[in-house]
Length: 414
Image (cartoon, rainbow, N blue to C red):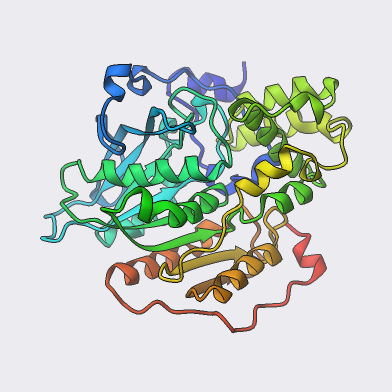
C-alpha cells in the first residue's frame, strides 16, 4: 500500500501542501485516490431550493491561522444549464469585533487540484497553507471565501476551466460568507486566484455586476491566469505537464459538454487519460505518482496534431477564454518570468488588451519564478493591492511602462 493511502486511511485526504505549488503547471505530475467525502457534501432536492449563495450547512474547522475561525460550507449556486446545484468550500473569518461597515471579503480561486469530487481543497488537511496570502489577509481583517468549484467535493465531474461555472461558484461563496457570524453586512469583495483560479478571477470580473448586483467588486487579482485557452492547449501539448493538462481538459469537457473525446484521443491512450482523471494534485507523493501515470502519453496520446485546431474543442477553448474587463474594474496581474505553462508573453498580451480597453493594470513580474510559485511569491503584493482597493485608494497602473525582456532560455525554464 502506498504511503499516502496509509495516511489517508486516518484522514479525509492526504494534504495538498504542494497543491498551490503545482496547480495547472503540475499537470505534468499526477496524483492518487482519496477517501470518499462525507454526507456533508450531499444536498437533497429540497435543500437545493433557495437563492444562489445561500448556505445549506456549515461546520467549524480547526487550525485556521492568526486566531481566525474557519468553516467548511455547502452553499447553493447555479449549474452549467441554469439548474440549482450545491458547491462546497471554506470560509475563514478574522477574530475580533466586526466593523460597523462589515468586513471586506476576498474570494480565493484555487489552481488546478483535479476533476473529480475527492480532489476538493476543502477535503485537504493543510487546506489553509494552500491559500496564497491567507494569513496576511486575516491579519488585515479580511474574510477569505475559498470555493471548491462545482464538482469538487460535491457531485462531479468538475467543469474544468469552464469560466462562467467557476465564476458563479466564486461569487456565490462571497454571498455565503455574508451569512456567517463575524462577517457583518459589508458588500465589498475582491477576487484573487492562481492559474485556473486566475481564469476564474477574470470571469468573476466579467459577470459580477450582472450576476450579483448587490455586491461591489473592488478589484480582480490573478497570478499566471489562463487567458488564452487556444494558446494554452497548443503550447502545453509540447510538454509532459501540458499533456496532463490536456488530458484533464479533454476528460472533463467530454462529460460536461458532450464533446467526442474518441475523435481526438487514441484508443490505447484512454486508460491513461481515465486514470489521470481520478488522481488529485495534492502532495509530493501524488506528484511523483502522477509523473509515472502520465508517461504513456509521451509516446501515444492524440490522434490529431493539436486539439486547439479541431472542433468542437477549439470553439470550447475560445468560449472559455476571458475577454477584457470593464475599465472601471482595477486589475492586478502577477507573472513569473520562467513560466513554461502560462507563458509570460501571453499574460503580457492580456495586460496590453486590458490597457487598450482603458483599464488600470498593476503588473508584477516575478523574476526567475515558474508557474508553481508565482502566487506564493506575489501574495504580499496582491494583498497590499487588494487592501488598497478596499480602502478606496486610487488604483495604480503600469500601462505604458516597458515590460522586462523574456529571454528564450529563461522562458523555457521551469
